[in-house]
Structures are given as C-alpha cells and as structure tokens.
Length: 371
Image (cartoon, rainbow, N blue to C red):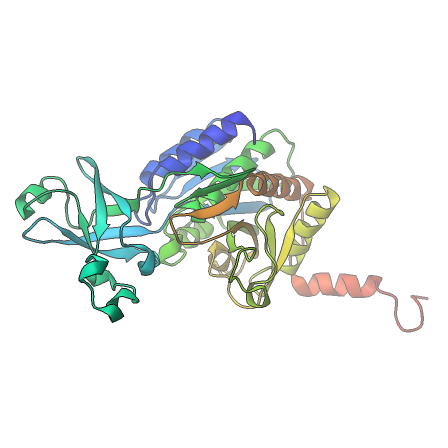
C-alpha cells in the first residue's frame, strides 16, 4: 500500500465512529476525498458523498459504511460507576476487562469494563458469560457527582483497541467492520480521478449501517443511481472452528470476495468478475442465498430498484476488538472497483431478463447452431 494511503488508513482507524456518532471519522474521509473528487458534500443524515464526472447519464454509486459497533452510557450509579447497552451488535461475552473510551462533551474519558472477580463467583457462574446488565464501566471516580462532570447519559463508547500490524500484510483492530469499506471507496475514487470515465461515480461513506442500513437508504434515494456497489466485510473461514460448509472457503489475503445471490444484479455481478479476471486480480466468490444484511440490500430496493452488487473484505473475528484483515485485500478491492467502473460503457442495460435473452440468442441450439 502506498505511503499516503496507509497514513490515511491509520488516521481513519484512529477516529471514533460508533453508529450515530460518526463525525470524527467522516471528517477524515471528507478531507481525503476533497483532494481528488470533482465535488464533495454531506447530508443531514451524516453521509459523505464525493462525485466524479457528475454530468454523465449513467450513475454508479459506491457505498462503504463508516460506523462501527460500540456502547452507550445509560445510567450513573451513586458510587460513580456507569452502566451501558450496546450499539450495533457487540458480542457481550467479550466485554469483561475491556478498556474503553467514553466520548463526552469535554473530551475522551478512559475507563475499564468491570466484572465480579472469578474468585468470588459460584462455580456455575464462572462458565457463563455475564449479561450486559451485570457489567459496568469504572472510570476511577468515587461519586455520581464527580462522574457527571465528565460523562453524560447517551455518551457513546468505543473500545481502546488501536490498530496493530501482525505478520506480513495482516493487521488487527476494532472497527475494521466497516471502516475498511469506507477506505476502499475513498481509494477507488482516488484511482478513478486519474481516468477518463463514461459514467458518473458517487463515492459514499455511509452512516448507521449497523442500526439498519440507514445511511445507505437515504443516500441511495438522493443520488438515484442506476447501479450501486456496497463494500463491506465478509466472514473469513480460514481459522480453527470456522465452518466452510456454511460460510464457504474464504481466506484473508486471497483477495476481495464477490457475492452472488438474489441481492446481486446478475449483469453487474458478472461485470465485476470479468474485471477481476481480465486484470488477474485475486478474488473469491461467495454465495448469499438471501438478503446480505449490508448496504447492498438497501441500495437494491431504493425507489423502483437499483442494480446492486457486493464486494467484501475477508475479516476474521468480526464484531470483536481484534478483527483481522489483509492490507493487500484492501488494495486489490480498490483496484477491482476502479477497473469495473473504468470499463463501464456510457449505457448499460442492467435488466436480468434482457441479459438472459441476449445470452440465449448467442447460445447454439440443440441442432448445433443458428441457421
């Protein structure tokens, strides 16, 4: 990965973005995109939208959600401890003993998630994950009044788990789901800025995906694209206890994952596979037999329908504080998407039935061919 792209990635990963509170990370994306997009804007929902070649008739949207899972403060006890609930699907079993950052009006406040010591538990309780209402955050204060000077009800919380480099091109961090998607969208726009395009491209860093694909819903409606590609993470199955029978054979470092299924437009999906093959970019295929649960789902059903696709980054240990991805996969995802859009003609018929009929006319019949 080129040096300035990696610096941007580091800065993006360091900026908090729990769902509904994405502004610090969105500011990083905005500052990066504005250096090479023809135009850039934000909307009332918090999405950041960059555009290239806006006057073209065919509009293509790229969407990677910037929001990450986290916690929210719900109550302050008289002793000054903080109770909380999760934002976006945190694995409660992983919470005890985590270091956290509370994002208050006066600045970040460090804390730890406490739980009764194992020595004081009954034998059966030692084997159980504590429910979230039996956990608390300790910031070191001794009273409610003291805590209220630093923290307020509704403040978001992220995990103090900064990005670290593992061996080779692998990295681990909280929040790769899905800051890597926002990163790939931004990098794709950087690559496309150097090309002569036949289509308009809208690169969107979406918000609140973890709360119901909300940013993708509103930005897709506003842009009204003909085609939209979501960039998210997919479950890697290359570690012990992962089921290849259920999740397919997906490996970190072997390229971005291209989805097939009902959420994916056949024409656009085939264009992505063709671009990967033509450029000899490593890629993997996965089957998604139902709605993907990503921004692609919201994109597909906007207005009267959009040709949707999904390109994902293999991710180990999703929704934990030690998610693992490959930096090379991020690079190849951006190259793939830039290739798809650079190859796209000014007019594309994304209707699946029309494409099926075109293929049928080209296919030789039982008699050995057309006469």
